Image 1 (cartoon, rainbow, N blue to C red):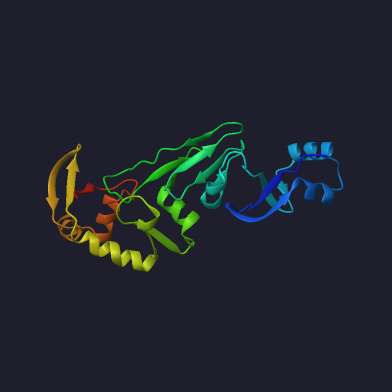
Image 2 (image 1 turned 90 degrees about the vertical axis):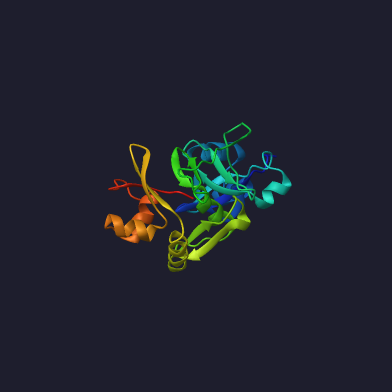
Length: 221
């Protein structure tokens, strides 16, 4: 009797969403094919009933971890990326052990962590918020303190704008030329007045949200 393989059925528009499960037996019965025919079918197909199908990693992940680790995405080579509740991200290659990916910061702010997923830079905080905290498309997330699920807060965009605006008022801002600090202000508002730009523009420059800023502005705290 052919070995029964369990599969996850993923939303093709968002492979991080599991919409169901199936087995090789169910597929064979549905298509009325034999075990050998199923293996050939599987080698030629990655979808079933409109969903992406991926084999469960029963041998790769322990029972405890299966309850918590969340699939992020699967690339064209079949590599599977997972997020853990300990705020770690790893990838499983075919026939290999998991490899944990490095999380890194782009500025000196503790709330900005990034990770390379399938060669593309992604917000690690957003990945964890979406995988474990139910982040919705119309919401944003913000890390308060050290990296952990407990410190990731979810807000509406309007709420976060008010919150970060208040924080920016009390954070010193520095102006740098050729990587050397030439001036500083006690707040984003003060810097905005002297540089004749808006307070939001100062915040965007400090948070590196502008590709070609007029000034090299950085948070000093």
